[in-house]
Length: 157
Image (cartoon, rainbow, N blue to C red; front, side):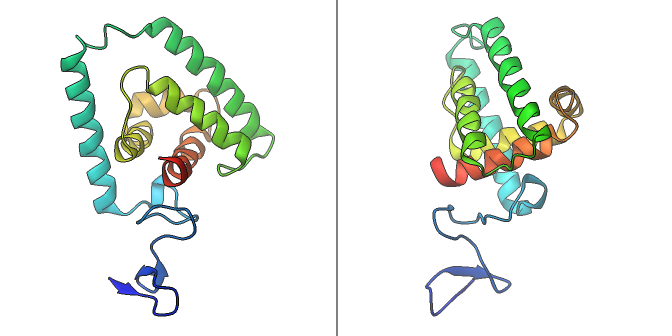
């Protein structure tokens, strides 16, 4: 990995790996579909490990009011769908606030690390049932939400 001598920013292929407040390995132009393959695999493994540990420690998330979680996600995804239709962008502050709500809802099960949260975005895109369910709210939901989750993780986690 090279470094930009002028800025001291790590580079790969002549492009900075991070800018401003983005975490190492993330750039403002990234989306879940363009995520580095190795980092994506790390995120998948982290999600699987954290979920398995949480399930084992909590009796399969017995402490979670799953009906309320689903109602809250339904409301949130309706708001996201309306925002997508209205032309919002994943890094808009209003969208990032909605993603903060998404993270808080996910946190009722366990508080996911940054990589586990990105693993969740990958799961939404790669699992047919999850992709279809999310995209039932809006045909661009998975890609939009994944990119918004990437921004959120890069700036707030």
